[in-house]
Length: 59
View 1 (tube, one colour):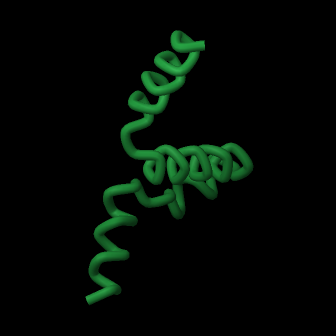
View 2 (spheres, helix red, strand yellow):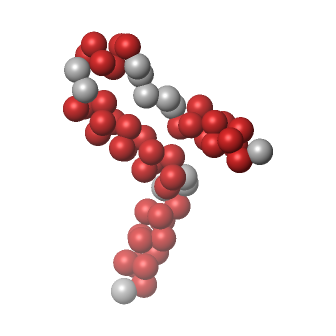
View 3 (cartoon, helix red, strand yellow):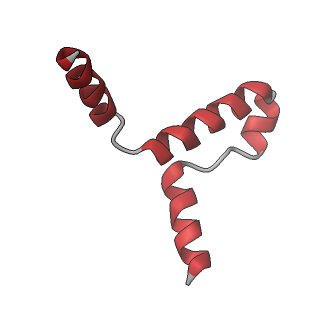
């Protein structure tokens, strides 16, 4: 039981930024549904760009 606890804690440490992982997963899912032309015309912003835009809007 103790080993299971240690393994689960170590797995959680590997997910350093869950918000970034969630954003990138949703972005990848949405990109998979779009055609190459749609992706070229309006690419989805990266997580860093998204975060900067949120900070700019909150000020």
